[in-house]
Image 1 (tube, one colour):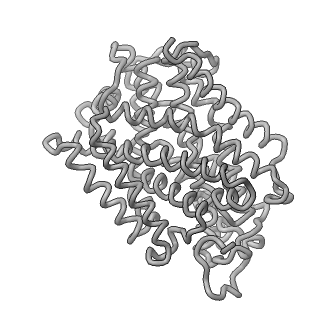
Image 2 (cartoon, rainbow, N blue to C red; image 1 turned 135 degrees about the vertical axis):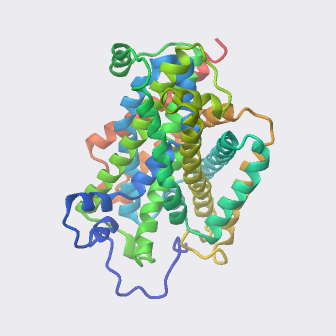
Image 3 (spheres, rainbow, N blue to C red; image 1 turned 90 degrees about the vertical axis):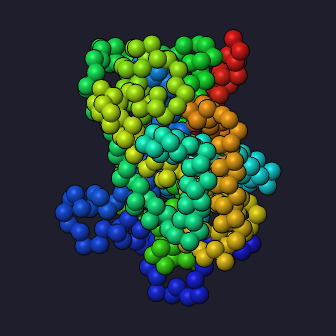
Length: 449
């Protein structure tokens, strides 16, 4: 079997990953605590920012408008769960020097590889399409005379061009900071009348309403919060960080250090906390404004922006647009690249964002095709917010399968050696898998009731 990813010709003088991790390398001679902390942050924070993509924003806004404060407890519960599974994914990439797709192909039955690959590609493509449409809807808020349909094609073309001829780091550098606009939901919560006693009860006293609306919304929240693509992206980005340091051979990337694992835990923890704080306050703010005023149904980005009016007034559209555009431009490349990684691994093609397009035509072809199909989805006449919400539901149904695969790999001594999961990670990882599986089954049980 050919080695995976881009390969250099020599690489004899490269420091091995088992001797110095990529985050350790980034620290250099830094001594100031804040500078050291910021340099530790990497793939985990990027994934956390992209997790609040338009699908997430739309889903959380729908939850707040439709169910009020009733799902706030989910934001608290998912912090340790998603931190655990993202860290497990990061650890797998660090220890093995490979992505999840390659490990699946190497160690597990081919039918399982293809089931996961096809499911992920379908979910990611629909998600990317919904996110592209949401970017268009956000621009439309600022330029109402330009239709959303007229915007999605150039948006998709720009994203394809960036990924094939540009750099994802360039995209993330440009748009990562725009996602901070989503913190407007945090501020807005303090500009409206909120029954904080009710908020506290719904935050710290989990409850489930056994009907189709609540369970479907719960599946959507879990699916957009603990999305399958995030796990594949996290593992692969750990590999890409090593490749950027010249570790183009698999044997150079294999293994890690205790300190690098600690830094990875900090990185993923910060990223997931960032993601869930935004999630919590989107639900809270939309509940305190839209739900309380009787606006229980969200159809457009303008509806979601109404929750920001108490803070920003006429600037609500600007704040929401900035956040949605930034999050969408971060998320779409992650979605399409995750599809390309898993398909390329399944079929043994060359792949990697560090590869030249001419050396990995199938990989970049999948990115382009996934984006183009996503663009086409926007011409089916589906409500943008509905598309975002049902994308989250699809991810919620696929996630249990991917999580089972993740946990099997993380506990396989042949793959992970001494770095197999300990008791705490297994409790959290399998607990996440069980919770998402139970929610998915319950959705079908209560469907139509």
